[in-house]
Image (cartoon, rainbow, N blue to C red):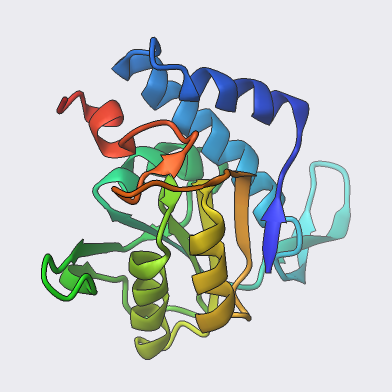
Length: 206
């Protein structure tokens, strides 16, 4: 289930993020701001329960989240979206998943996984700036479902049609929220027009 968000402010920030002249500091700030805007849309339908509280004036029935929210950045670039998520939902718990692509088989291989325990009706929110081939994200969702997290959604800043197709085929029940679906992947599996290597631009490693 693809959700492409076209909010004008989001698109303005995405254009600045794509610009090759944008430095690390501004890139990190923009990635965080874009993540917050995407997460706001992605969580609009999250389940709530009634709860009774007292205001300074009277008692009332309010709302509280039904699910434990678990934010799962895919290492390393997904960590660049974590601050934006925690700004919106500071009570969320955080897990981490590391994947790399085997150079021979081209299949994703898990090299790290640390997830919170003792969760109540968890909703896992996987964050990764780029949904490119879709292999790593699909494998991450596989892992989360095996761990007992039946409710999963994905937030990516950019997506390629190829990655969207993989997620739709392997996890048709998982909503994917993105600011843009770009044209294609190039021969090096980079999204075109894209924004380059998100990890390198976040952390200044190139």
